[in-house]
Amino acid sequence: MKKILIKQWVFFKEHYWDSGSHIQNTTAMEGAKNFLEMLGRMGIKKAILTNNYKEFVEPQYQALFGDLKGVKIYDRASKPDKKRFEEALKDFNLKPEQVVKIGDTLFKDAPPAINLGVEFMLFSKRDAHLLTEMNNRFKFNKPAEIGFAENHDQLISIFCQSSLANLR
Image (cartoon, rainbow, N blue to C red):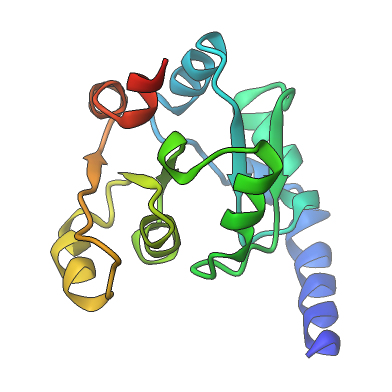
């Protein structure tokens, strides 16, 4: 397994990373930068849980959103495995009810968050039609109530209704 991962990383590095196309061809959803800035002004801690490598995510985040100050990256999260989610909760000394997970991939981001009791919001244009299927497919500890946003205004609206906003 380790040899395969190394080969995959070498291919990725040579054909994607070194060319800079990982940054050039990546865009953020409209309003994401403003939303992250708003969270910063509110003093809300931020973390990135990603299946990608930290070496890839850091420059990409900086190119899209600027400073990484105060943002902890949990790379190679193997989502939907919940281990990295549990690690983040422990590192930040937070209980699940004190956290809102905002994800852009329904089947990888939602199940571990919901099963840990973390409120989940989907910020995506591509997965909206899958919300019902996901509730039927996964056995959650409790029914999943997912906030869904396709744009910045919707994201702000559902965030303001979240338990995290109410903790402040």
